[in-house]
Amino acid sequence: MYLTIDFGNTASKYALFSEGGILRFHGEFVDVDSLLAQEALRGVSLKACIFSTVRKEIPWLTGLECPVHLFSSSMKLPVKMGYGTPETLGADRLAGVVGARWLMVQKGLGSLGACLVIDAGTCITYDWASAEGEYLGGGISPGLHMRYLALHQQTGKLPLVSHEVFENHWGSNTNESILCGVQQGIAGEVEHQIGLFLEKFDTGNVFITGGDAGFLAKPLKTKIFVEPMLIHYGLMHALLYHENH
Image (tube, rainbow, N blue to C red; front, side, top):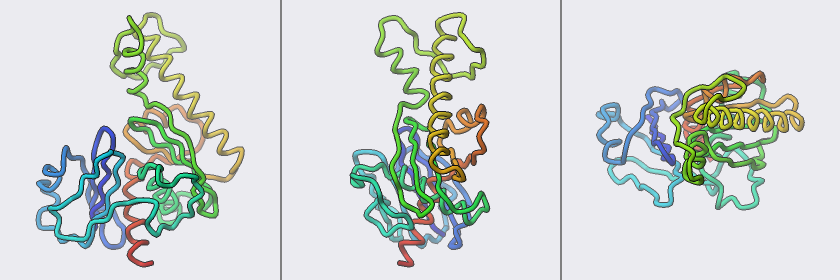
């Protein structure tokens, strides 16, 4: 079995895969100690572990009795690097693209071509890859809850609202106006990014992942693929590729 771990800004998740790359189990954890105490890992013989992190401090895993790999752009990967500063590229962004290209082939989610990966987490990231497998770059913007928080913290009177889906075209009070503005702003941004991508790659595939993927995907009219475990598929494929090259 293989273990993949994604240390995100807000949440940390892990997954167990068979040697053939089939997902067996996944879950969340609070810290490394709680991960190692997970019942799903008890009695499991791990061949290797790979993890990605967007945190400043790298949480090395010293309690695992298997080789542990830190995912980065310096590994041998099944994608070409077209980013100007790969050393500053978020590991989760690159892993998402690797996962998307793997799923296009292995899961029959579309012919292998260009892809756009939208990761809706603490931040919303947009990552482009060409049909030839070159990582081109992308964009980063504040995520859903970061926008609510910014409106509250950067103003004198606006309240901090709790997220709920708001479907009206306008808000009839301050809370509704914040919900309306934030949600319509994100929806417009996502639609614009997808439009730009399809102008360049009209047969490309769009993937959405992350904690707010369901919210982002619901109003979209474009054909998209929602995959909550996209980063983990990318980590797993990167590990298999690294072992075989």
